[in-house]
Length: 468
Image 1 (cartoon, one colour):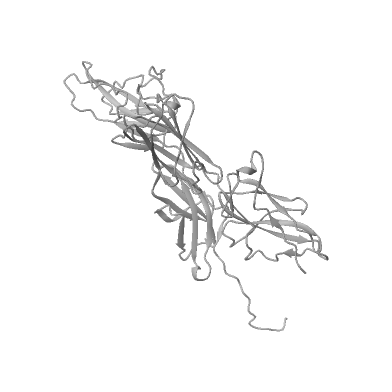
Image 2 (spheres, rainbow, N blue to C red):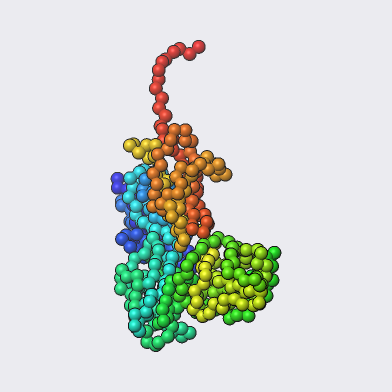
């Protein structure tokens, strides 16, 4: 007797809440979703003569390319959809199983079942960097770097580049050919121009960044820090007071000149060590701290450092961002270097990065057959300042630890094969950590223990004796 099958609708996922169905894209038979909760429509074909009615439709999901399937939802046949919530980003395969009134299931097992629907859940927005290029005559130029796992470049769609005269209102589009990462153009007016880069991935996640380019020369552009500058740190000899210098707005973001050094820190409290040179007989009366948020305009910290015997300054910043710092010393008779002027490069760039890397475990697979005794771990790790060889992988029998490391300071390749030594517990949790250049650490841990004991016990009768 022919069994009844269920047809999943591959063309659309119905969203919950603000989701727009038109926001879904099917690329190569795979739908990309920027939401983790959605409805999956299904359609029941007509029943053949003599077939018992379907009592229930069950949804199964696989996150390891069909090696294992987990029950995800069930629904009566007239409901027409499942409600599903993904626990993590990544590729999800979906298949269905029906149960009729005689409690017969089809297919009888999920082993080897081919997916009816494939969905990539992607909730992470693209990471962008935009910087100015040296002008070529009357032409301005920018280059950019885009990082995302799910980009499909379409002309003037995936990547949009626009500009306007500094302080202007309307954005003017620029044509971006596929495959390029820099562009020169001849602006309609002379003078500096704001450039905006917008990027959309397959799931509909969007990011944008803005930089200012100038016909007199440009250098790498940094995202401006929030306005407000520094606030005094307790016990440093500084006292909070309103800044008298002008505060840059978001549209004042400029290409920051390349500095001799650039340091990353993962704290809003910063300590600067310095040394004094060429000090005359009058000594040093004060050290002034000047800062810039955009590489163009400068502001002086409201208080001077007046104890040169302490060769360090501590200060607090408002939040993440790139800060240009210059220190100026004054002699005992008031002489010193001139304060930094418009366009001067700072002595030091400091990037405050408080964001942990985003780490996601894609799969942890136990080897079979010739791969018995091996564990395959797949992950993704993203961060704008990811360190070199940033990945550490550990295991523990309990979520509270202790954690034992089996792979340390390895490349962010997304996959590692571990040959398990003797004495490994039969089940344990796996943790993947990623560290960025500022020292922030992100991690992902398996939701449940990984069971590596795949032995199937067997019984053999060795003797028969009368019972007493």
